[in-house]
Image (cartoon, rainbow, N blue to C red):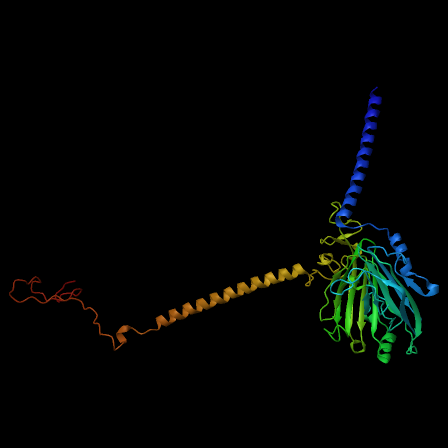
Length: 452
Protein backbone atom coordinates (compact mmCIF):
# COMPACT_ATOMS: atom_id res chain seq x y z
CA UNK A 1 0.00 0.00 0.00
CA UNK A 2 2.84 2.29 0.88
CA UNK A 3 4.55 1.74 -2.50
CA UNK A 4 1.28 2.39 -4.37
CA UNK A 5 0.86 5.73 -2.62
CA UNK A 6 4.48 6.58 -3.34
CA UNK A 7 4.08 5.70 -7.04
CA UNK A 8 0.92 7.82 -7.27
CA UNK A 9 2.71 10.77 -5.67
CA UNK A 10 5.59 10.44 -8.15
CA UNK A 11 3.13 10.27 -11.07
CA UNK A 12 1.32 13.37 -9.91
CA UNK A 13 4.67 15.16 -9.53
CA UNK A 14 5.74 14.16 -13.06
CA UNK A 15 2.45 15.30 -14.55
CA UNK A 16 2.68 18.58 -12.65
CA UNK A 17 6.21 19.17 -13.93
CA UNK A 18 5.15 18.45 -17.52
CA UNK A 19 2.20 20.83 -17.22
CA UNK A 20 4.36 23.56 -15.72
CA UNK A 21 7.01 23.02 -18.41
CA UNK A 22 4.39 23.21 -21.17
CA UNK A 23 2.87 26.36 -19.73
CA UNK A 24 6.33 27.89 -19.41
CA UNK A 25 7.10 27.13 -23.08
CA UNK A 26 3.82 28.68 -24.21
CA UNK A 27 4.45 31.70 -22.01
CA UNK A 28 7.95 32.12 -23.45
CA UNK A 29 6.64 31.84 -27.02
CA UNK A 30 3.90 34.38 -26.30
CA UNK A 31 6.42 36.80 -24.79
CA UNK A 32 8.64 36.51 -27.86
CA UNK A 33 5.72 37.14 -30.18
CA UNK A 34 4.59 40.12 -28.11
CA UNK A 35 8.10 41.54 -28.09
CA UNK A 36 8.30 41.22 -31.87
CA UNK A 37 4.95 42.95 -32.26
CA UNK A 38 5.96 45.69 -29.83
CA UNK A 39 9.19 46.31 -31.74
CA UNK A 40 7.45 46.11 -35.11
CA UNK A 41 9.77 43.33 -36.20
CA UNK A 42 9.19 40.03 -37.98
CA UNK A 43 11.35 36.97 -37.72
CA UNK A 44 12.01 35.94 -41.33
CA UNK A 45 13.65 32.66 -42.22
CA UNK A 46 16.99 33.31 -44.03
CA UNK A 47 16.06 30.63 -46.57
CA UNK A 48 12.86 32.52 -47.34
CA UNK A 49 14.82 35.76 -47.81
CA UNK A 50 17.17 33.95 -50.19
CA UNK A 51 14.15 32.71 -52.17
CA UNK A 52 12.69 36.21 -52.32
CA UNK A 53 16.01 37.66 -53.53
CA UNK A 54 16.66 34.97 -56.16
CA UNK A 55 15.28 37.11 -58.99
CA UNK A 56 17.73 39.83 -58.02
CA UNK A 57 20.85 37.92 -56.96
CA UNK A 58 20.69 35.29 -59.75
CA UNK A 59 18.20 36.57 -62.29
CA UNK A 60 18.46 34.91 -65.72
CA UNK A 61 22.17 34.41 -66.50
CA UNK A 62 21.39 32.97 -69.93
CA UNK A 63 19.56 36.16 -70.87
CA UNK A 64 21.98 38.39 -68.92
CA UNK A 65 19.03 39.87 -67.01
CA UNK A 66 18.11 40.45 -63.39
CA UNK A 67 14.97 41.80 -61.74
CA UNK A 68 13.62 43.20 -58.52
CA UNK A 69 12.59 40.54 -55.96
CA UNK A 70 9.38 38.67 -56.91
CA UNK A 71 9.17 40.50 -60.28
CA UNK A 72 6.72 40.94 -62.06
CA UNK A 73 4.78 40.89 -58.80
CA UNK A 74 5.31 43.55 -56.17
CA UNK A 75 8.57 43.21 -54.29
CA UNK A 76 8.41 42.13 -50.61
CA UNK A 77 8.51 44.59 -47.74
CA UNK A 78 11.48 44.93 -45.39
CA UNK A 79 14.08 43.11 -47.46
CA UNK A 80 17.71 43.61 -48.50
CA UNK A 81 19.18 41.83 -51.52
CA UNK A 82 22.77 42.05 -52.81
CA UNK A 83 24.36 41.37 -56.20
CA UNK A 84 27.80 41.72 -57.79
CA UNK A 85 28.32 41.63 -61.56
CA UNK A 86 31.91 41.01 -62.63
CA UNK A 87 33.25 40.89 -66.17
CA UNK A 88 36.30 39.07 -67.47
CA UNK A 89 39.59 40.89 -67.25
CA UNK A 90 39.75 43.48 -69.99
CA UNK A 91 36.03 44.29 -70.00
CA UNK A 92 33.59 46.69 -68.37
CA UNK A 93 30.06 46.04 -67.08
CA UNK A 94 27.13 48.01 -68.52
CA UNK A 95 23.55 47.97 -67.16
CA UNK A 96 20.44 49.09 -69.06
CA UNK A 97 16.96 49.25 -67.44
CA UNK A 98 14.05 48.25 -69.64
CA UNK A 99 10.28 47.66 -69.72
CA UNK A 100 9.55 48.58 -66.10
CA UNK A 101 10.96 50.71 -63.32
CA UNK A 102 8.62 51.46 -60.40
CA UNK A 103 10.00 51.84 -56.88
CA UNK A 104 8.53 53.81 -53.98
CA UNK A 105 9.14 57.55 -54.63
CA UNK A 106 11.71 59.65 -52.80
CA UNK A 107 10.95 61.67 -49.66
CA UNK A 108 10.14 65.39 -49.64
CA UNK A 109 13.84 66.25 -49.84
CA UNK A 110 14.25 64.15 -52.99
CA UNK A 111 16.29 61.43 -51.27
CA UNK A 112 15.65 57.74 -51.98
CA UNK A 113 15.19 56.82 -48.33
CA UNK A 114 12.35 54.26 -48.29
CA UNK A 115 12.84 51.77 -51.15
CA UNK A 116 15.79 52.10 -53.52
CA UNK A 117 18.30 50.46 -55.84
CA UNK A 118 21.91 51.29 -54.93
CA UNK A 119 24.75 50.84 -57.47
CA UNK A 120 28.47 51.19 -56.69
CA UNK A 121 31.49 51.18 -58.98
CA UNK A 122 33.33 48.08 -57.77
CA UNK A 123 32.77 44.67 -56.25
CA UNK A 124 32.26 45.75 -52.61
CA UNK A 125 29.78 47.84 -50.67
CA UNK A 126 32.48 50.44 -49.94
CA UNK A 127 33.14 51.10 -53.64
CA UNK A 128 32.39 54.62 -54.97
CA UNK A 129 28.67 55.29 -55.13
CA UNK A 130 27.27 55.71 -58.64
CA UNK A 131 23.72 56.41 -57.52
CA UNK A 132 20.61 55.46 -55.53
CA UNK A 133 17.49 55.19 -57.68
CA UNK A 134 13.78 55.15 -56.83
CA UNK A 135 10.43 56.44 -58.17
CA UNK A 136 9.28 55.74 -61.74
CA UNK A 137 12.03 57.46 -63.72
CA UNK A 138 14.38 55.09 -65.53
CA UNK A 139 18.03 55.38 -64.45
CA UNK A 140 20.59 56.16 -67.18
CA UNK A 141 22.75 53.46 -68.74
CA UNK A 142 25.44 52.70 -66.15
CA UNK A 143 28.97 51.57 -67.03
CA UNK A 144 31.62 50.50 -64.56
CA UNK A 145 35.12 51.96 -64.52
CA UNK A 146 36.57 48.55 -63.75
CA UNK A 147 35.47 44.97 -63.96
CA UNK A 148 32.60 45.03 -61.45
CA UNK A 149 29.42 46.68 -60.27
CA UNK A 150 27.95 46.17 -56.78
CA UNK A 151 24.16 46.46 -56.35
CA UNK A 152 21.75 46.42 -53.44
CA UNK A 153 17.96 46.48 -53.44
CA UNK A 154 16.36 47.63 -50.19
CA UNK A 155 12.71 48.07 -49.16
CA UNK A 156 11.15 49.34 -45.93
CA UNK A 157 8.18 47.96 -44.01
CA UNK A 158 5.46 49.83 -45.90
CA UNK A 159 4.21 50.14 -49.51
CA UNK A 160 5.49 47.88 -52.28
CA UNK A 161 5.68 48.53 -56.03
CA UNK A 162 6.23 46.42 -59.13
CA UNK A 163 10.00 46.93 -59.30
CA UNK A 164 12.21 46.78 -62.39
CA UNK A 165 13.91 44.74 -65.07
CA UNK A 166 17.57 45.24 -66.09
CA UNK A 167 19.89 43.88 -68.78
CA UNK A 168 23.68 43.78 -68.38
CA UNK A 169 26.38 43.41 -71.00
CA UNK A 170 30.17 43.31 -71.08
CA UNK A 171 32.07 45.78 -73.24
CA UNK A 172 35.81 45.75 -74.06
CA UNK A 173 38.12 47.86 -71.94
CA UNK A 174 40.40 49.97 -74.17
CA UNK A 175 43.06 49.77 -71.45
CA UNK A 176 42.75 46.01 -71.24
CA UNK A 177 46.41 45.55 -72.10
CA UNK A 178 47.35 46.16 -68.46
CA UNK A 179 48.66 43.01 -66.73
CA UNK A 180 46.17 41.28 -64.45
CA UNK A 181 47.64 40.76 -60.97
CA UNK A 182 44.34 39.76 -59.38
CA UNK A 183 42.63 41.14 -56.29
CA UNK A 184 44.60 42.01 -53.17
CA UNK A 185 42.91 39.81 -50.56
CA UNK A 186 44.09 38.10 -47.38
CA UNK A 187 42.27 35.63 -45.13
CA UNK A 188 43.23 34.96 -41.50
CA UNK A 189 41.72 33.95 -38.18
CA UNK A 190 42.31 32.10 -34.93
CA UNK A 191 42.56 33.27 -31.34
CA UNK A 192 45.29 35.77 -32.25
CA UNK A 193 46.99 36.99 -35.40
CA UNK A 194 48.82 39.80 -37.13
CA UNK A 195 48.06 41.82 -40.25
CA UNK A 196 50.35 44.40 -41.78
CA UNK A 197 51.00 46.48 -44.85
CA UNK A 198 54.10 44.33 -45.29
CA UNK A 199 51.75 41.55 -46.49
CA UNK A 200 51.42 43.48 -49.76
CA UNK A 201 53.80 42.00 -52.30
CA UNK A 202 56.44 43.99 -54.13
CA UNK A 203 54.88 42.99 -57.47
CA UNK A 204 51.68 44.79 -56.50
CA UNK A 205 53.61 47.86 -55.40
CA UNK A 206 55.53 47.86 -58.68
CA UNK A 207 52.24 47.61 -60.56
CA UNK A 208 51.00 50.71 -58.73
CA UNK A 209 54.20 52.59 -59.58
CA UNK A 210 54.30 51.55 -63.24
CA UNK A 211 50.61 51.93 -64.11
CA UNK A 212 49.49 54.52 -61.53
CA UNK A 213 46.79 52.22 -60.12
CA UNK A 214 45.94 52.39 -56.41
CA UNK A 215 46.73 49.69 -53.88
CA UNK A 216 43.39 48.40 -52.58
CA UNK A 217 43.80 45.44 -50.22
CA UNK A 218 41.34 43.76 -47.83
CA UNK A 219 42.13 41.49 -44.87
CA UNK A 220 39.27 39.22 -43.75
CA UNK A 221 39.54 38.16 -40.10
CA UNK A 222 37.26 35.35 -38.92
CA UNK A 223 36.72 34.03 -35.42
CA UNK A 224 34.48 31.35 -34.00
CA UNK A 225 30.77 32.00 -33.73
CA UNK A 226 29.93 33.91 -30.57
CA UNK A 227 33.31 35.68 -30.51
CA UNK A 228 34.25 39.30 -31.11
CA UNK A 229 37.47 40.59 -32.65
CA UNK A 230 39.66 43.15 -30.88
CA UNK A 231 42.15 44.98 -33.15
CA UNK A 232 45.11 47.04 -31.88
CA UNK A 233 47.35 49.09 -34.16
CA UNK A 234 50.93 48.77 -32.94
CA UNK A 235 52.27 50.86 -35.82
CA UNK A 236 50.38 53.34 -37.95
CA UNK A 237 51.89 55.97 -40.21
CA UNK A 238 50.27 57.38 -43.33
CA UNK A 239 52.45 59.15 -45.85
CA UNK A 240 49.76 61.82 -46.28
CA UNK A 241 47.89 62.12 -42.97
CA UNK A 242 44.49 63.84 -43.02
CA UNK A 243 44.21 63.21 -46.77
CA UNK A 244 41.33 60.74 -46.84
CA UNK A 245 41.45 60.42 -50.63
CA UNK A 246 45.10 59.48 -51.00
CA UNK A 247 45.55 56.92 -48.21
CA UNK A 248 43.33 55.49 -45.47
CA UNK A 249 42.32 52.38 -43.53
CA UNK A 250 38.71 51.23 -43.12
CA UNK A 251 37.33 48.66 -40.67
CA UNK A 252 34.04 46.88 -41.43
CA UNK A 253 32.03 44.79 -39.00
CA UNK A 254 30.30 41.76 -40.57
CA UNK A 255 29.84 43.18 -44.09
CA UNK A 256 31.78 45.46 -46.41
CA UNK A 257 29.06 48.04 -47.01
CA UNK A 258 29.09 51.59 -45.75
CA UNK A 259 26.45 50.92 -43.09
CA UNK A 260 28.79 48.40 -41.43
CA UNK A 261 31.92 50.56 -41.53
CA UNK A 262 32.85 51.13 -37.88
CA UNK A 263 36.06 53.14 -38.38
CA UNK A 264 38.03 55.00 -41.02
CA UNK A 265 41.58 56.10 -40.19
CA UNK A 266 43.20 58.77 -42.32
CA UNK A 267 44.79 61.01 -39.67
CA UNK A 268 47.82 60.53 -37.46
CA UNK A 269 46.28 58.22 -34.82
CA UNK A 270 44.53 54.85 -35.08
CA UNK A 271 42.80 53.68 -31.90
CA UNK A 272 41.72 50.14 -31.06
CA UNK A 273 38.53 48.66 -32.51
CA UNK A 274 36.20 45.95 -31.17
CA UNK A 275 33.69 44.26 -33.46
CA UNK A 276 30.20 43.06 -32.62
CA UNK A 277 30.36 40.07 -34.98
CA UNK A 278 32.90 37.31 -35.58
CA UNK A 279 33.99 38.67 -38.99
CA UNK A 280 35.97 41.86 -39.58
CA UNK A 281 37.25 43.35 -42.83
CA UNK A 282 40.24 45.70 -42.78
CA UNK A 283 40.78 47.66 -45.99
CA UNK A 284 43.97 49.54 -46.87
CA UNK A 285 43.78 52.00 -49.77
CA UNK A 286 46.66 54.04 -51.11
CA UNK A 287 47.32 55.88 -54.31
CA UNK A 288 50.75 56.02 -55.89
CA UNK A 289 51.96 59.03 -53.91
CA UNK A 290 50.91 57.37 -50.61
CA UNK A 291 52.53 54.03 -51.26
CA UNK A 292 54.96 54.40 -48.34
CA UNK A 293 52.09 54.41 -45.84
CA UNK A 294 52.32 51.48 -43.44
CA UNK A 295 50.60 49.84 -40.49
CA UNK A 296 50.95 46.81 -38.20
CA UNK A 297 48.14 45.45 -36.06
CA UNK A 298 47.32 42.60 -33.70
CA UNK A 299 43.89 41.03 -33.49
CA UNK A 300 42.48 38.93 -30.65
CA UNK A 301 39.35 36.78 -30.66
CA UNK A 302 37.46 37.25 -27.40
CA UNK A 303 34.15 35.91 -26.19
CA UNK A 304 31.86 38.56 -24.76
CA UNK A 305 29.92 37.48 -21.68
CA UNK A 306 26.16 37.72 -22.06
CA UNK A 307 25.02 40.24 -19.47
CA UNK A 308 21.50 38.85 -19.68
CA UNK A 309 22.61 35.38 -18.57
CA UNK A 310 23.45 35.25 -14.87
CA UNK A 311 25.39 32.01 -15.08
CA UNK A 312 27.50 33.14 -18.04
CA UNK A 313 31.14 33.42 -17.01
CA UNK A 314 34.58 32.46 -18.28
CA UNK A 315 35.43 28.77 -18.06
CA UNK A 316 38.57 28.63 -15.86
CA UNK A 317 39.81 25.51 -17.69
CA UNK A 318 39.46 26.72 -21.29
CA UNK A 319 39.31 30.52 -20.99
CA UNK A 320 41.02 33.42 -19.26
CA UNK A 321 38.86 36.11 -17.67
CA UNK A 322 39.97 39.60 -18.77
CA UNK A 323 37.86 41.22 -15.99
CA UNK A 324 36.09 43.34 -18.60
CA UNK A 325 33.19 40.98 -19.45
CA UNK A 326 35.29 39.17 -22.07
CA UNK A 327 37.23 35.89 -22.17
CA UNK A 328 40.29 34.95 -24.23
CA UNK A 329 42.08 31.69 -24.89
CA UNK A 330 44.44 30.75 -22.02
CA UNK A 331 47.37 30.30 -24.42
CA UNK A 332 47.44 34.09 -24.83
CA UNK A 333 48.33 34.69 -21.18
CA UNK A 334 51.92 35.87 -20.60
CA UNK A 335 52.83 35.93 -24.30
CA UNK A 336 54.28 39.49 -24.16
CA UNK A 337 51.17 40.82 -25.93
CA UNK A 338 48.39 42.61 -24.08
CA UNK A 339 45.46 40.74 -25.58
CA UNK A 340 43.00 41.90 -22.90
CA UNK A 341 41.87 45.49 -23.26
CA UNK A 342 43.34 46.43 -19.86
CA UNK A 343 46.36 44.16 -20.14
CA UNK A 344 45.55 41.92 -17.17
CA UNK A 345 46.75 38.85 -19.11
CA UNK A 346 50.34 40.15 -18.83
CA UNK A 347 50.25 40.99 -15.11
CA UNK A 348 52.47 38.92 -12.84
CA UNK A 349 54.33 37.35 -15.77
CA UNK A 350 57.97 36.85 -14.70
CA UNK A 351 60.72 36.42 -17.22
CA UNK A 352 62.89 33.42 -16.24
CA UNK A 353 66.00 35.60 -16.33
CA UNK A 354 64.49 38.50 -14.42
CA UNK A 355 63.65 38.87 -10.74
CA UNK A 356 60.75 41.30 -11.19
CA UNK A 357 58.35 41.63 -14.08
CA UNK A 358 57.09 45.17 -14.42
CA UNK A 359 55.11 46.44 -17.37
CA UNK A 360 55.48 50.22 -17.40
CA UNK A 361 52.76 50.49 -20.05
CA UNK A 362 50.17 48.91 -17.75
CA UNK A 363 47.50 51.43 -16.63
CA UNK A 364 47.71 50.70 -12.90
CA UNK A 365 51.53 50.77 -12.99
CA UNK A 366 51.35 54.21 -14.60
CA UNK A 367 48.92 55.38 -11.89
CA UNK A 368 51.22 54.10 -9.13
CA UNK A 369 54.22 55.82 -10.70
CA UNK A 370 52.31 59.10 -10.96
CA UNK A 371 51.30 58.89 -7.27
CA UNK A 372 54.89 58.14 -6.24
CA UNK A 373 56.17 61.06 -8.29
CA UNK A 374 53.60 63.39 -6.68
CA UNK A 375 54.63 62.18 -3.21
CA UNK A 376 58.34 62.63 -3.95
CA UNK A 377 57.77 66.09 -5.40
CA UNK A 378 55.72 67.07 -2.34
CA UNK A 379 58.40 65.80 0.05
CA UNK A 380 61.16 67.55 -1.88
CA UNK A 381 59.20 70.81 -1.97
CA UNK A 382 58.60 70.64 1.81
CA UNK A 383 62.29 70.02 2.50
CA UNK A 384 63.34 72.94 0.31
CA UNK A 385 60.84 75.31 1.95
CA UNK A 386 61.99 74.20 5.42
CA UNK A 387 65.63 74.78 4.43
CA UNK A 388 64.87 78.31 3.18
CA UNK A 389 62.97 79.11 6.39
CA UNK A 390 65.88 77.88 8.56
CA UNK A 391 68.40 79.91 6.55
CA UNK A 392 66.26 83.03 6.86
CA UNK A 393 65.97 82.68 10.63
CA UNK A 394 69.75 82.12 10.99
CA UNK A 395 70.44 85.21 8.91
CA UNK A 396 68.15 87.37 11.07
CA UNK A 397 69.86 86.16 14.26
CA UNK A 398 73.26 86.88 12.76
CA UNK A 399 72.25 90.39 11.76
CA UNK A 400 70.95 91.10 15.30
CA UNK A 401 74.24 89.90 16.80
CA UNK A 402 76.33 92.14 14.55
CA UNK A 403 74.35 95.35 15.28
CA UNK A 404 76.59 98.04 17.27
CA UNK A 405 75.49 99.23 20.78
CA UNK A 406 73.33 102.27 21.02
CA UNK A 407 75.98 104.04 23.13
CA UNK A 408 78.33 104.07 20.14
CA UNK A 409 75.82 105.98 18.12
CA UNK A 410 76.76 109.72 18.28
CA UNK A 411 73.21 110.74 17.58
CA UNK A 412 71.90 109.08 20.73
CA UNK A 413 72.27 110.85 24.15
CA UNK A 414 75.15 109.70 26.34
CA UNK A 415 74.03 107.62 29.22
CA UNK A 416 76.33 107.60 32.22
CA UNK A 417 76.34 104.29 33.95
CA UNK A 418 75.37 104.44 37.59
CA UNK A 419 78.26 104.96 40.06
CA UNK A 420 78.49 103.39 43.51
CA UNK A 421 77.16 105.64 46.21
CA UNK A 422 79.77 107.06 48.70
CA UNK A 423 78.95 108.29 52.14
CA UNK A 424 80.23 111.86 52.70
CA UNK A 425 82.91 112.22 55.36
CA UNK A 426 81.66 113.52 58.74
CA UNK A 427 82.31 117.05 59.75
CA UNK A 428 84.79 117.28 62.55
CA UNK A 429 83.10 118.01 65.82
CA UNK A 430 79.67 117.44 64.46
CA UNK A 431 78.96 114.50 66.71
CA UNK A 432 78.34 112.32 63.77
CA UNK A 433 81.68 110.71 63.97
CA UNK A 434 80.65 107.12 64.07
CA UNK A 435 83.97 105.77 62.87
CA UNK A 436 85.81 106.70 66.01
CA UNK A 437 88.43 108.65 64.26
CA UNK A 438 88.83 106.12 61.48
CA UNK A 439 88.97 107.19 57.90
CA UNK A 440 85.87 106.61 55.82
CA UNK A 441 86.18 104.37 52.87
CA UNK A 442 83.60 103.45 50.29
CA UNK A 443 81.42 100.43 50.82
CA UNK A 444 83.45 97.29 50.38
CA UNK A 445 86.76 98.87 51.41
CA UNK A 446 88.68 98.50 54.62
CA UNK A 447 89.67 101.24 57.09
CA UNK A 448 93.32 102.07 57.12
CA UNK A 449 93.77 100.95 60.65
CA UNK A 450 91.89 97.69 60.20
CA UNK A 451 93.34 94.81 61.93
CA UNK A 452 93.44 91.44 60.50
